[in-house]
Length: 251
Image (cartoon, rainbow, N blue to C red; front, side, top):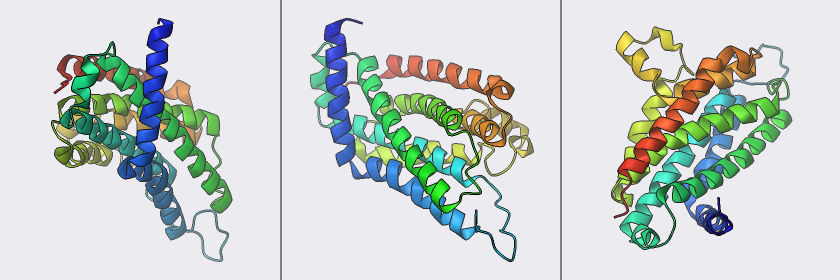
């Protein structure tokens, strides 16, 4: 990487950071909504509170759900911003610069991963403060798992962002693709309980492997027990990134 490339990359990254903080859907969806979901579910199931009656058994991990929502919100924000750029002719102007699609998407990834770390930090702080009996997890290892999962899920967002023509369709198309993946991820019930054809689809989706890895870190089985999921996340990232560079539309 040349110094000129790095200067352009970091300038674009800083610009995208400022744009992201001004984009309500991305900022609120990434930083605020997952935290509210986590707190609301935690209080609903009386997590971490000593009481006369035992707390209700939660059918899924609220922290992992919130972490996946952080990733999905980042992808929706990515899709929306790139489609706004395309519709407004900004991508067309960027095309005349030395910036490549990889550079543009790379700046988006750095911004989204940065805000993912901030959002996850807020989540952990809230969990330790409000539900001290729940957040008994290696925070560093869990953060790495969330970042790897977000990294891979974002690569699917690259494909969506490369194809969605206008901002009008960005949010509904993003939701239509991403939220069914959450239902198939294994967070709410084991993937093995799905019909065989749905199970096959689930295993080629990054959210499924991200949830499996996060669950493994959470329950203590660790990364070594989920090397297949780690490999799948990396492979899916490479495949989706390759597809997005081929189908990326400047106009």
